Image 1 (spheres, rainbow, N blue to C red):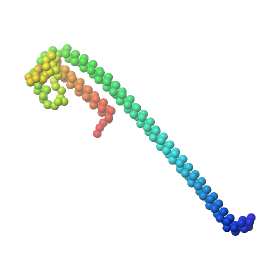
Image 2 (tube, helix red, strand yellow):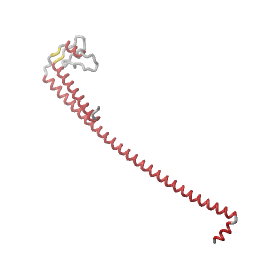
Image 3 (spheres, rainbow, N blue to C red):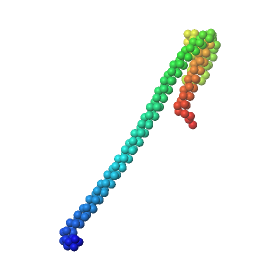
Image 4 (tube, one colour):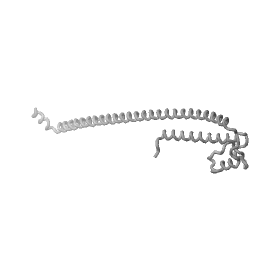
Length: 182
């Protein structure tokens, strides 16, 4: 059998054909190997992309859930604030009525004292002594001014206390929401 093969190999054309066939076979194997490697790489990249997309989707869901939680808490705080403001308004009306009943509407601060109180700081942010309850002009409105009654002063004190309490509550709520700052 080897002898027959060797005798056939003496023909140069047969040697070239066998050589080309061998090279083509090797190349076919190589191409198949490269295609297999490419397919594995594509599969690996597709799996990595799928994992990344799943992780991204999970992170988006977590953030959406966190946002919904914060939004619900903010809605609740807004509703609580509205209820609190309504309760404060009712309490203020009741307290002002009680002050009007408990005071005599007597002059207790002269017009000049009211004028001093209304211009003491010069800051536009400082509230003025309130209007008188006697129906006269606003306190300190003209050069001479008008005196303030005990009712005016009591209402002014009540309003200042309420404003302070409201500001303190909002500050406490803010600190609770944002936590302690350095």
